[in-house]
Image (cartoon, rainbow, N blue to C red; front, top):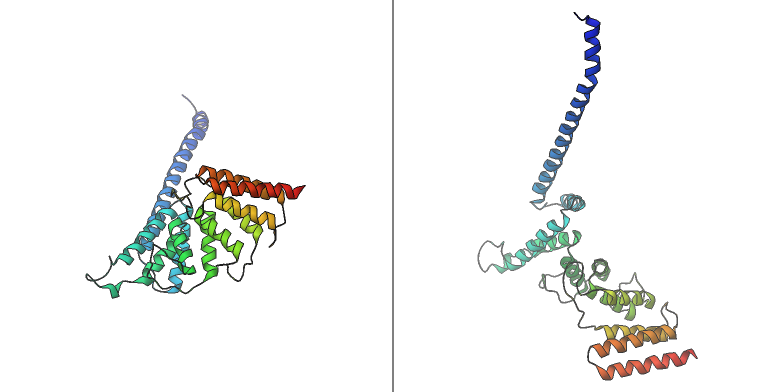
Length: 279
C-alpha cells in the first residue's frame, strides 16, 4: 500500500501538466471571447452608422466612427455606400412621390458626398474639389456650394496624392499660372514642375482603377511646358538650359508617337536652341 505522501507526490508531478492544459484551454476561450467582442463592437458600429445624426455633435461622432471603421478595413466600403446614397438623393430616389423635384434633399446628398470623400473614395474627392472651385461636375451638378478655393485645393491635393492624374495637372496649372490658386498659396514653378512630372510618371490606371489619359493635356504638351519653364526660370525655379533641352527632346519624341510631326520638329528645334545656350 502506498502512503499518502507518495500519492501526494504522484499528484504533485501530474498537476503541472493538467494546469498547463487548463491554461491553454482558458487562453483559447479568452481569445474567442475577444474575437466575439470585436465582432459585436463592429456590428454595433455599423448599426449606429445606419442613421444620420441631426445635430453637429452627432455628425462629428459619425465622422470619428467612420475613421475607426476605415482603420479596420471597412472605410472604402463605407465610402462607396455613402457615394451611392449621394447619387440616389440626386436622382430623387428618396422623395415621397414621383416628380417631387422640390423634395430632393440636396443637403443630405452633400452630406453623404462629404463622408465618401472623408473615406478616401477618389470619385467623391474629385467631385468635392470641383464643386468648391465652381467647376462643372458630374456628381451633384445642381447643388449650390459657396466658392472656396482653399477647400477645393485641399481636396484637389488629396485626389492627386491618391493618384488622380487630372488633379495633378490642375495643381500644376494652378502653381504655374496662379489661376484657381487659393490666397494661402503663391505661384511656384518649382512646385508646378514637381506635379507636372508626377502626372507624366503615372501609368494608364490610377489608384481607383480608372483610366485617365489626360487627353486635354497630352504628354508632349506637358513636357514642352516643362522645357519652357526651365529655360526661362522664375517663380522659385532656376534657369537650367540643359534640363530644358532634355524636356524639349522628350516632348518631340512624345509628339512623334502621337503622329504630330510638325510639332515634333518644333520641339527638336527648341531643344537645339537650349543646347546652343549652354555653349
